[in-house]
Length: 442
Image (tube, rainbow, N blue to C red):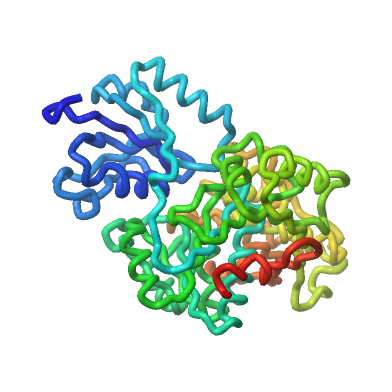
């Protein structure tokens, strides 16, 4: 490598960590030239560009985003020297198959480490997980409420979901529902932002996390990093919490980068112990003791509730669950299913015969989904497909059980009876969250 021949880089991503890693590692370094991002996991990312306004002076035309399936052609056509892996919630086998493809095509394969973490001047609490859907959101909300109860100003910074206009999404701050509507956020974004707003809290997100961190620090005493999927933190934490799911015991050592979170965290929360398969909690405790013996272990329940259980009891129901958890997260059920079972639903409808539009492809891609409908809504058309699917199924059931953490009925303007399911973290043994937060609350 010489100053006249910068290393040519491609970044494998899913419109999240890939942009962050570019901003931190490559944007201002003339030793590298990023020729493309690739896209997977999230629909309709490929074909766009990372805009010049965010990419910097070295990229007057921005950076194109192409399909990951075109990886070998990209390496050959653009003489790529290094391919950077920058997305999450995939098996170790998946990662190494990509590494083999990259090496076979003649390029190096890189997974960045702590060099992508930003340094904060404000105390930071990080909540990550071994898999998506383990219970990060309910843990993060409780962390925020404890910080607020201690008289400290808390600001949540959410892992990126920049699926729209990236220039407008460079730095996002949400405090009201009207701001969510004005930003035309996806259902997936609302699932992460709306619960904070319901508690009167502020949440930050976007595409440029140095700018986001600086903005959050101007109005907060404590920063809460609310991780996405099972990704590692973007900001170096003072308190590092990782949530594990006993319904997927074993995944903590087989999914990237969740295993890194398990090994590095100072505190482990084993969630959902109230519904865990027999022996799964003990298996997780043994794993943590083996790979991270210095970490504390807290066992917690994910307590599920509805305002009126009689709306479910004896009824035929359609269950709607969080999209990422039940699709690439691999879960066949969530809080909605648990509530339907607990409160005595007479029948849980198979949603597949009622699928419309893009939801047909979702069920084909994720054949484990047999009794729940994932709340997919990455764009206007997919939201319309979801609404049409719900209305088609409603003719065969009494009520829709909504297990997503938002008012989906209001978002989709549903014209059918529905009941929302709420879920909260309830520590049962080991250190409480108050104990874990002592280093930042004093």
